[in-house]
Image (tube, rainbow, N blue to C red):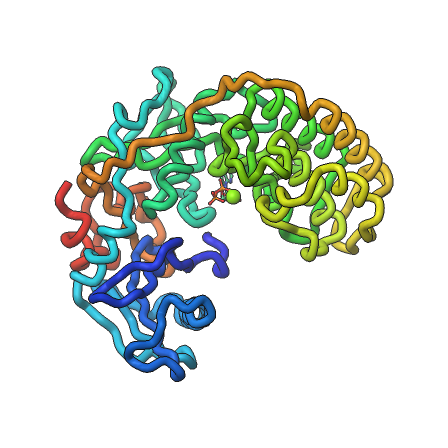
Length: 427
Ligand SMILES: Nc1ncnc2c1ncn2[C@@H]1O[C@H](COP(=O)(O)OP(=O)(O)O)[C@@H](O)[C@H]1O
Ligand SMILES: [Mg+2]
């Protein structure tokens, strides 16, 4: 099940509907979208919707409402109006709302040729994947039958928002390009929409571990050492900066003593990192992120936990000097197999070594992180599916949101709605 706190989220960018800036919210469980309008008291009809404070306030109000009423919006509802006190004022059933927002936000999926994936990419249709669980926003646990006739489990990662298209394709290509590595998720399939044949996502081997954000956290020194070696290989051999190393993207499985770094959605060629990162020395972006991640895991102090951007602003020299001065007190819910001082020492030695190497020249052999978005592609995929609450035990669901036999079975709540035919229909 998608963690309830993650089930709803606003689109990255606001949309303009009827000449007014509004927000589109996604329900990642039912994979439906809603146009949300929040009416703030202080704001008159011509209120400045782009004002950052009111924008944030509206986001908070909508977030609160969705958390309290996760299953209140029936099929066919395309928009809601909320008061500042998170009261539902009205519902809209107008499909044009979603089609207007959708044209601005829903992805234009590339064809296989446009995606320019390496020749060894193996494809599978979304309708050939059986949904077993919903792990995260746009990540499902699925199974499929492989060439040997065996049932294989996989994590199916897809995207339903245009703004994520580039990073998704970049990750897809990179996982295909990188040689197999015990600390990386193994690519297994490129997933195509069954109607248009366009690329909607990818499968990786299912890793039955847990990430390093939720207590109790166990973090072995050997996992840190594996992470440092992996980052060296990525940075120095492949010329790639992961650029999003943080506890949420580190997974461990204690039973098999395995550790994985996932989520290459922000990865970049080191040589191609933007100019404003130069001051932070792009070769060391991941090194800094590892230090901050380990500090966060050990202490559970969020204050130092930074996004990569904030991290990049610090010069590595002062960063290294600061490491011992931080408060490294181990949190009661974090279990380590060595004293904290050992983790600190290993990190400091590594930072010093990487610092010395920082001026070395690296050849980029990684993939091109750019994709084609010419705006000409037709809509290519529908995603809607019944919310978890409406799933019927025994009814097998496919990754395309439909029951396995192709038609809803007796007792299965109907999933048809006006949304299906509007805005995404002209495949
Ligand atoms: N191969 C996998 N096996 C198990 N869980 C996975 C796998 N891939 C992703 N996940 C789960 O989905 C979450 C989000 O995946 P991630 O690649 O980080 O996507 P995002 O770009 O949305 O952050 C992970 O934190 C993990 O819980
Ligand atoms: Mg992630």
